[in-house]
Length: 73
Image (cartoon, rainbow, N blue to C red; front, top):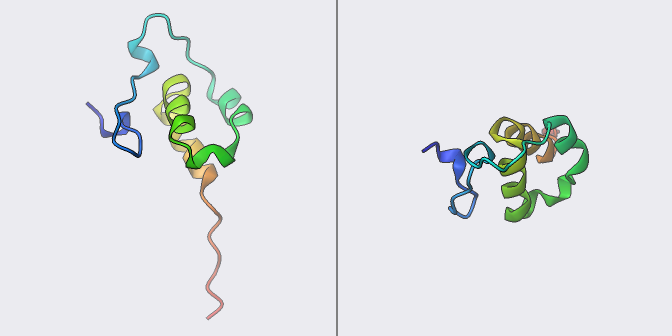
């Protein structure tokens, strides 16, 4: 199993592709609809991984990181 199938707490997240009744949400829709301030919530990260896919989760996580600031020194 790929290590990305685990949430930050170490719990297993089932992949939507493994569930016959699950319908994958387009990543563009996920990025528009899921608030970035939910990044600290394990439930929101699980939702993105399950319904939007691992690739979309990686994009979503990059968007939630604070911008790097230049060191003035």
